[in-house]
Amino acid sequence: MNKKSIKRAFCMFLIMSLCCLAGCGARQEAEAVSDIKEDDLIVVGFSQVGSESYWRNVNSESMRSVFTKENGYKLIFEDAQQKQTNQIKAIRSFIQQEVDYIVVAPVTEAGWDTVLQEARDEGIPVIIVDRMVDASSDLFECWVGSDFELEGRKMCEWLRWFCVKNNILAEDIYIADVQGTIGASAQIGRTKGLEAAAEKYGWNIVAQADGEFTRAKGYEVTQQLLKRNPKINVVYCENDDEAFGAIKAIEDAGKRVGSNIKGGEIMVVSFDGVKPEALQDVLDNSISCIVECNPFHGPRVEAIIRKLQNGETPQKYEYVDEDMFSAHEEIESVVVDSKQYPVTRITQEVIDRRIMEFDSGDYGDQAENVY
Image (cartoon, rainbow, N blue to C red; front, top):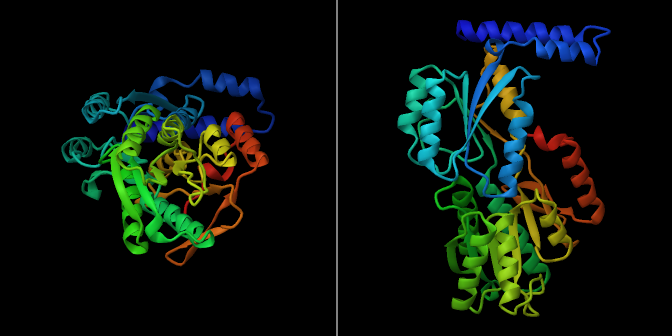
């Protein structure tokens, strides 16, 4: 830890200690915060992918809500607008500003070695969140996020058991894969999980196309795929925003969305489970199953920075815990690699509870759990 960091850590310790003293009320805390000088704050530069989805916006808010002046931080937030060139430019700007930590949610996995080496040469720890980078692990301090391939495998196990319990033959499954941004970790992992399952169980993947994780592109891609492949009866959307677009495309094509594949309906499955609209679609049978992608990385990243400030070594990779949602009672859990994952049955009560937690900022275990 450099002298600058030591000074900041000591100042933060004093502030926190003062606020914990008996009789320290709201007025004293406010005064303590107002007395914090800019030089005493831990400066964090965060390069976010963009705002392409509701999930991404919640992820950004999770970071903003943690890295505040009240908590002893100054956050420099840069929106890359889905362009890696913007992220590389932002990281170099962070280096020039001599921030204490750099946090990056990378657009794609490749192309990071040079700029990460530049940060390392300046002694600035880099924390990767959400998506992975295809770079030497020596170039970043640690990574926090989801196991995207596991997400895909969990979804496919749910689909397999749905078919078994409803007497649907594997050869009668025709899947359109509306992929996320090509090259992003979520796309790579979720696509890989699907492709492995299709080969293992004998499903037909009849089409794959980039939906860019957006509603508009999800609509456009699904519309095109349905015209080219009339046999499609499962649309595997790699996030909820794509699923919203896919549902509208299916309906606009004069087809029915739902789980009754034998009856001619087209099943939609997706990932994220953050937006209430998506959970409502599960309850309404427009989306048959959602595998959650936990966006609350802020508290986890802050805990890592605390460890680094204290001279501790955090885990290199930290995976957040995630749920599954479906309105179908016949599948209570799935098993992947001998581990059981419960499936939460969606009810209005479940939706209302999650809305209340999000509105209050009380995310409970969602922000903290790792496995």
